Length: 139
Image (cartoon, rainbow, N blue to C red; front, top):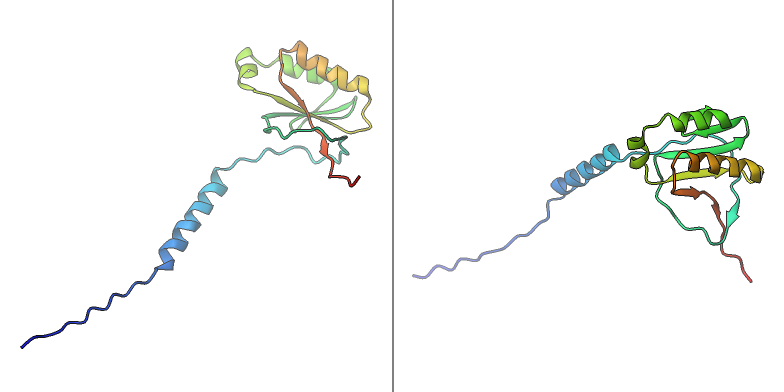
């Protein structure tokens, strides 16, 4: 007597382990991501059609006026900025790849040059000027 066995192959995808793994990945990236916080100053950045995206650096200098210049979150004056940057050691300066300078479009050109002079005097070479991207205009 011959017995016939019918094998039925059942395949099913378990979604619970998949959801657990995705949740763990999301939690990992949320915890390990760092955000650079800049002061909440309302600036109207000048626009540029040739601007290029740059990686945010650890130092952002925000120029509002001669008496209101921010080094990241620290409010300084023009002379205070010079003093603060000169206090940095050479090792600290070498770790900084670039500096982002952002200024309101109403900031005088001479003030922007003064800030750039202070940066150069303190051996900072890679400086990026932050601008607002212009949307494609119809011609």
